[in-house]
Image (cartoon, rainbow, N blue to C red; front, side):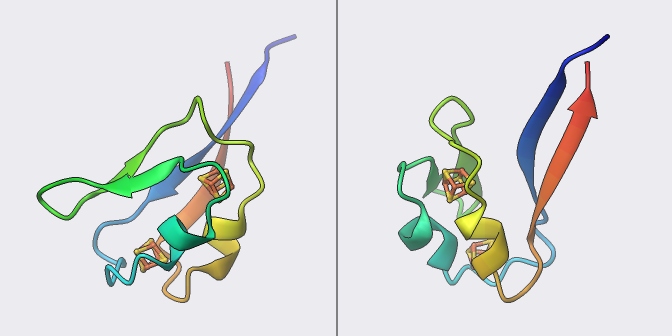
Length: 67
Ligand code: SF4
Ligand code: SF4
């Protein structure tokens, strides 16, 4: 049986760059680079999904992939 990997997917087209997700993250797993793209550090993420549930624009989605 494979393992499931759960992570976030960021949709640049939907994102309004409000950065509420960065403020909501208790793990400092989200940031923004010099071009304005959201950066996600998966190794810091505890999968609480405060970021995705708080995004008003549906730009963050939770993805589950079987490996
Ligand atoms: S909360 Fe949503 S719209 Fe705001 S920066 Fe994060 S992903 Fe983009
Ligand atoms: S799921 Fe939680 S820990 Fe992971 S990036 Fe979002 S707010 Fe941060």
